[in-house]
Length: 108
View 1 (cartoon, rainbow, N blue to C red):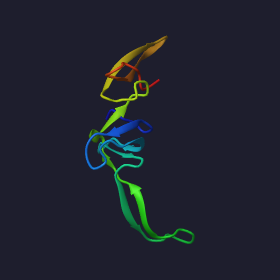
View 2: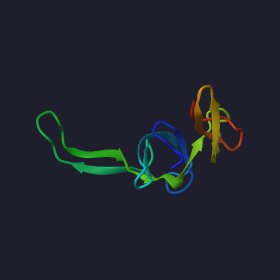
View 3: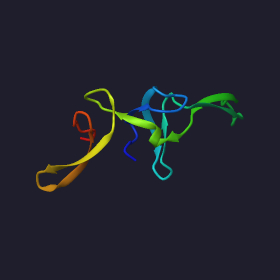
């Protein structure tokens, strides 16, 4: 997966096409992610103890990671992700994600 928790992404297909949001949680084993405000579903929830009301709750559902593209922080466009090794003084090279359009690094 080329996306991580906290990244800003845009949905490229499905009913929420064009929506943008941050990744709240990622599940690398099944290659799914939860994006805030995307794939909203209604869940019928029973009250669990005092002070917790029951009812119909709206929450985000997991979507496949292949349905989103990372938004570059410098050029503000949806882009593909490349990988590059950056040399560090006295340490082994660090692998970082880079924008395929402008070449800016996502990871610092």
